[in-house]
Each structure stands twice: as structure tokens, then as C-alpha cells.
Image 1 (tube, helix red, strand yellow):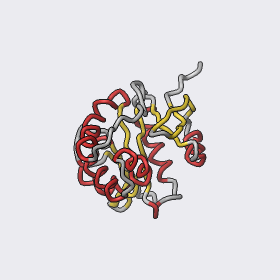
Image 2 (cartoon, rainbow, N blue to C red):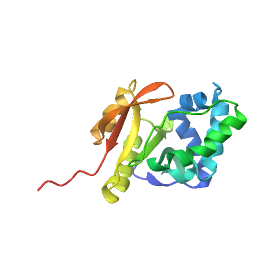
Image 3 (cartoon, one colour):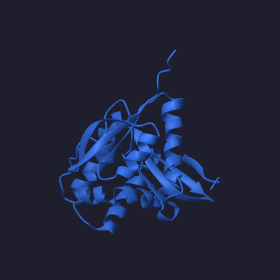
Length: 193
């Protein structure tokens, strides 16, 4: 387990990223495309991960690797870029799935947003998700002074407990595709003198 390496994703990681992220967001992708087909959801997500300049692009992902195998992935981007990053997705859904794609804004300017994080099922329970989050906190918050945010489903107390343990704080509620979510953020703590 100490051989795990976390790095910025490459285009070649796209299929593995899609597999991991779908674990966290299959329900939402199915809602977006208006179909309950896991294969269509994966095709949709893979299409965008392989492309550049969109919300789910490999450019906005980090992966955890063990023995040169991607075992986890996280999708994170600047919240101020949500709307431009969402345009290609919206256009694709309207063209290919003939559904109106107009979800609520899940993030906003002023935070780097963890859209989704997924760990391969045969690697779950080993602390890999927590390790990826600690890596992101160190990179975005500690080294670059950025605020990082995410949404957690109110029906997922286990995930919320982990986020709070890592230092995230509740900053309110959001609705995403009809589900009530808690908005959590972590920021650099001001040193007290």
C-alpha cells in the first residue's frame, strides 16, 4: 500500500477514471442523460473525460496508482469555471439525448470543487479516498491557499464523517438534481498569534 502514487491524470487514464468516477456519480449521470442505462452513463462520462476543456476532462482529474494500475480517481476544478466547463456537456446532452440539461450550480467562484471521487471496489476500505483528499488539501489549501469545497449527500453520513475529520466545515445546503446536499469547505486556517 505504500507504493500508492497520486498524480495528475493523463488522457490514457480515461477509461480507468470513468470506471472510478461512475461509482460516485452513476445516478447523477443517468439523471443528466435521462436514461437509467449504466453502459450509456459510462459512454457519456468516458466521452468527456477523454476530451479537454469540460467539467469531467482528464485535465481536471487526479488518479491514485498502485503498481501502475489506476485504483482511484478524483475530479476537481475551479468553481469560477463551472459554467464554461459545463457548456460542452449541456450541448452534447441536448443534441444526443434530447433532454433539457439545466442542473443547479453545484459550486461557485472562490472554491476548488471536488465534483466526484471514486475508489475501485476491490481497493475500498484501505484509506485510499482519505489519502487522495489529504493530497488535495495539501496541494490546493496548504500550498496554494485555496478554499476547497464539495457536496455530500445527507444520506451518506459515513462520507460526511470522513470530510469533517479531515477539516471540512459545513457552509450550507445545496440542491443537485433534486437531492438535498450539504456543502462543505476547507480553507487555510489563519495562524493565531
